[in-house]
Length: 175
Image (cartoon, rainbow, N blue to C red; front, side, top):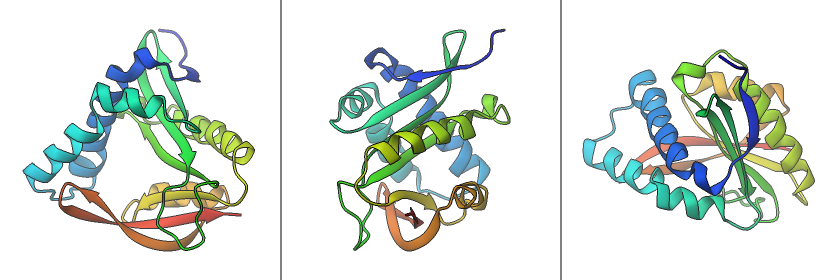
């Protein structure tokens, strides 16, 4: 088995990104944190967010960047950054946001999340005219500690829709 390689995502990664994103969301938030999403809301969210067509569109978004970690042709993790979309009064689209940092269950502990975070932060610093932003689920203390170690501080709260269900999220800012 070879070492994982991190590279920019390509359009032909869309289907694998959809599968990895969907499963990682379930593993993290449903199985791991036990959030009791109603089935219809979870299904609607997963179907809208993690399908090959939606990912293909997101991969082509102007001003956004995606990276994947793969080993032997299998995607293990990914990160996505782009123009800020978080609802904060100081936030601007010209600022950069880390939108997703997902590491599949089978790749936990390999350091891929930290590697992807560093790559994304470097990209974000080069593509912003203001602070960097991250939205994170309020109950994900592990992620919050990781982001704090990279200089992010809580700057607000908002609700993130998973279907009609609303997750309580923190808005983190650096700079």
